Length: 234
Length: 93
Picture 1 (cartoon, one colour):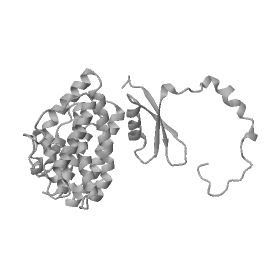
Picture 2: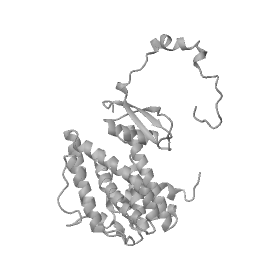
Picture 3: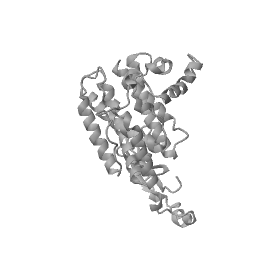
Picture 4: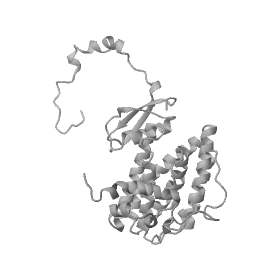
């Protein structure tokens, strides 16, 4: 299991999920914001997957069980608050992880140093929306809380050590993530669910190629064009 | 979203230049307006600084006032600094 594949698949899969908002976002401004974030992630995925092999081959020709992304990023978009909960959990994690990789001297330091600035914006975007939805109307509060609750079980997997990233102290990363997310969620008048964020049972297995049911449909759509017209160019 | 206020966006493309009106957008508040502006108007490295201003806060001249406002300047060429030679190397003028 290579770290480039794990991090690259996280970025690729989340990029595709965010891309699904195109044409469906609640407002035009937000549609462009989500597309920008998706494109940042796609750029990261291209660099990371290219370290591992042919990027197109890896993205479009692998079977479901060969993907190494965490299950959090493959979860369907749900409503806008659900997507923002996923963004909050993941972007805080990704920023902290890239900060550590950038500070180290491993093979991912150059990429992480560049990408951490992109991800800092993704995290800022998710935090602002969490605050507005949580501290907004009764309905937005309820939807944001529902998103945080539903995705909580997938957060424990983020902190299971990835082979080849020796510079990362995963327990410290988890602690930093938890306090950062707790701070935002508290300011948004929301609450984090109890337990199962890695301390107890939590969902997981994505890094071993075990994925949740919606993922199969997602990659079927993502790979459809490439598989229908192998080698096509324009 | 129709109940979100309209904001005008001004982007400064380089240090030393002034902010230029780039367009407008809808946002629920100033912080989100600034972020939307970044996403909509600086995607292709257009800027190093962005301002957002509530459109409702702008007082604009009316088309009806065009003649009294602007017409009198039309026949006063002596107001133009046309008698100076521009040194080489002066850009953005």
